[in-house]
Length: 381
Figure (cartoon, rainbow, N blue to C red):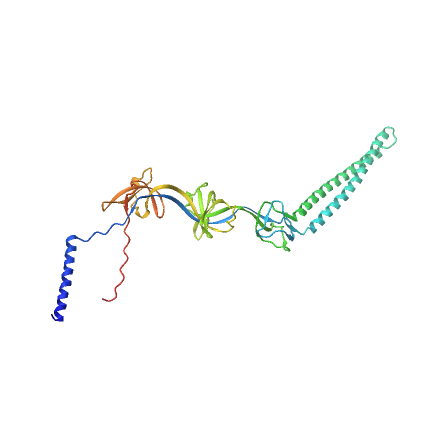
């Protein structure tokens, strides 16, 4: 057999094989694609609301100066632990000390003048009493009696004036002594020096507003301030459990409870956000002021619930909602067929849905087919 005939013979064999395969496929039909499905299983399920947050001390005090002057001594630094009543700063006291000395000197002078005037008033009273006795014996004139009465009234008036001046001087002294005491600044609470805004030698002006020297914070209890979107905040309630992670320790979750939802929102880039506060114990000191947090507010929880993938949920059937949940249509896999079935659903997360009625453990549901990717272009033959 020559080369040409051999080629024709091979081509005939290949054509016969292709015709046989086509005939078998036409006779038996193309096999239906296998349905993608998932089994109804039991699992713990949680529905959460997520938000971003920041950590801040629950209790803190901005310690300021109540008098003006030069900050002469600062006895603490950032990070130092202080106790209530500890001396932490001093303002130059010389101006206030000199005022106190002047007040005391004036008060002493007024006290001496008052003593002298009271003595004159006593003498004037004695003269008046004597003249009243002598007037009956016609030993003194009526004019002398009246004059002695006038002298007594003048002495009493001057003594009253000096008493008023003394009271005023005591009040001024008390105020200046208080200002002098303000030059020594004490810690108002136990805590840690969290920030410092003034330095030694700096002149503080307290005439209009009390200048802040430093901040003392109790870092053993922290508050996380979460910003929750307006669509989610109606489901957040005081007392709700919340957990969070921080960037430096993603494997650990801190547990807390919602304390307060602030009524006034913040608008950031046209997004309305509400501040939600939750307190957390920080005895180990791992949480620090200003840390970013990822928040998880626990809306609902189900333990060992029947679950299916969320993508298996089909059309909503609100007319068949029941006491156990909202109604959805799913496709149940029975003997190779996808049978429409209505189920009642509880908790729904991004990946799983809780089945409360309509399916049993071990049943299978059909998943939606993945969209086929477009074929890669073929260049040439």
